[in-house]
Length: 270
Image 1 (cartoon, rainbow, N blue to C red):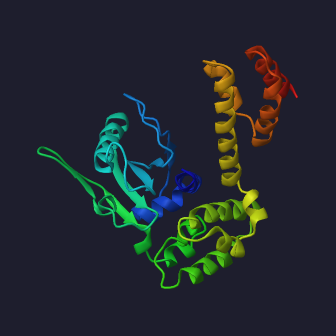
Image 2: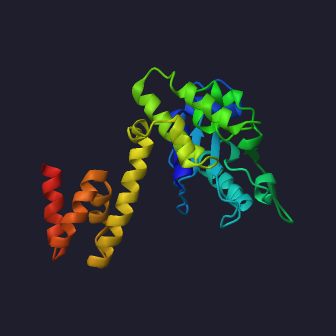
Image 3: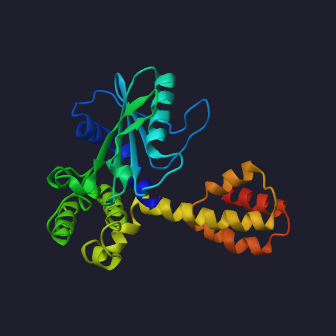
């Protein structure tokens, strides 16, 4: 899911650039919508909804060829739910990140006896790299685009990210590049071009580290305390990666849930 999360971060951080790229329009006003729809909650880290003046751009990033329910049916479901909730047109684009010959990557419609629903499919490995190299917001996707020499393309990506003047923006873009380039290149090769210390300063890298740390701590808490209250789980979820590491050590001294509550209270007061 880290690849999907990186793409979702980019789309929500730079919605104007994604609207220009995929819709070919100059957006005046963009709103990033929640990924949970009413009627029956649907949530996916790979999904982004961007609402412009009179339509919604639904982006879905794919690394896996299989899904449940099948991708075409899911696109129909999303489209209907979005139209019912927001009462406007919906443009759907599925972006396949990793080269594959699976049928899903070459299917752009749902069809049964009574319904035909179409959506756009973009296969990054077929796209011209120039579009991505010339736009910092799309730069992390560039290493997955068409090239006769992928290693040369990775060199170009590294050169472009080094020219981004804002340090924090450069770090965040570089962090996304490292994650997405991992779909095509070996980690050692990526680190030859992109410094590891810069990656660790990126928001997306830190977010991934925090989420992975929470998963580990949450499993430990579930083993120690059965049916932990959801409000406590949410307080733990909000801890930084460092605090989660501290909690992992402190957990060995806890004998009851009250000990966890006390520890959380102390962290929030400190």
